[in-house]
Image (cartoon, rainbow, N blue to C red; front, side, top):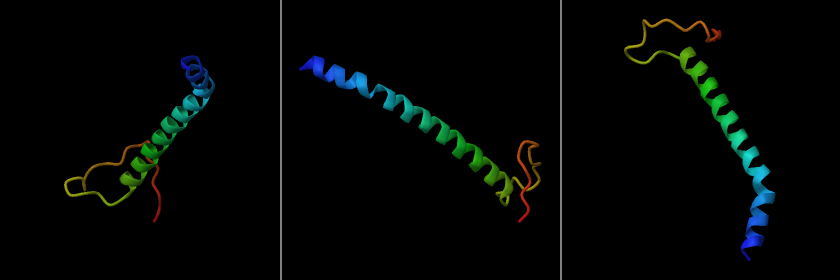
Length: 61
């Protein structure tokens, strides 16, 4: 019984790795796009005079 469970776990391992990679890449993409959107939005109170980082592209509205 245990050997059957271990065999099932060994065959499903590549799916777990793929799911982890997709999760990490998706998180990085969401964080990057969210940062660009935040920097291009209206500044919250206290941030009006802060400069935009050079890395963030300026999007015309």
